[in-house]
Amino acid sequence: MKGEISVHELARDFGSLRAVNQVSFNVSPGEFFGFLGPNGAGKTTTIKILCTLLRPTSGRATVSGWDVSKNPHDTRKSIGVVFQEPTLDDRLTARENLLFHAMIYGVPSSVRKNRIQQLLEVVGLADRSDDLVRTFSGGMRRRLELARGLMHEPSVLFLDEPTVGLDPQTRSRIWDLIRAMQKERGVTVFLTTHSMEEAEGCDRVAIMDHGKIIALDTPDKLKSNLGKEVVSIQTDQPDDVRKTLETVAPAQILSFEGRLEIQTADAGVYIARALPNVRARMQSVSIHKPTLEDVFLHLTGRTIREESADPYAHLRMIHHSRQRQSE
Image (cartoon, rainbow, N blue to C red):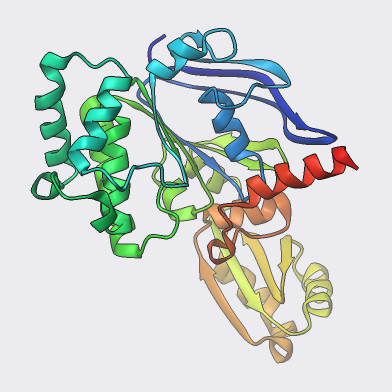
């Protein structure tokens, strides 16, 4: 079906390293689907398989009804892609970049001019259409890449960490643009990200770690599995405080870098009962509703830190694997 993605037991090996491990999921037409996980989790490898840039070691994947391994040409015609790495030709103007893409994808010459103009207006670059891309800011280039990805009217738009390196204001503008285009055009959006805020805006989120999908549901349902509230305690004695809390008020307690997180149905009751026993060993305490960060911490025992994002981790992983093979 147009706009649908179906993945069954997908795997990809780089030598002895299994980057994607028996992954299965489905994405409905018009859905905003998120792949959340740290760098090196297998997100980029998966998206490259779906975009026909890598062949799977085993398993099967279809995009808009096309088998990505057996029908790569038809698959490419049905998708638009915005990768982490810039791929625009900065020696060309914005209009020339879109025209070049339109010609490659066989967009009829009779509609190219109007479609290019419409997309430039949609992404707010009509007044810079004849300027060289090398004069554009990072945010402007990202907007132009979005326009290019939609130039041939794909049924699926793949976004691989599309806002890495952008300032918060530009990120917000990019996401407003993506959501507006997704709703207006009915295109299926497949996003990979390590940003909790970006994942919160998806219809459904698959959490990936070490090549496997460890959870998949709507953001609200994923968070609801943790209870109604989370009590966060900062302490320089996490092991001692945890033992005391487990004795006086049993609950699900997670520990990370001097912070204890307790999942509870009623934070007020828990604090009144438990904290008097550890007050002298506490540095601070706070209460918040469960977030996707809490979900990831609960599932993996660690957090995703955006400031440690490394867009080239995937490339180094492959390079390291090839080095081991040649030794």
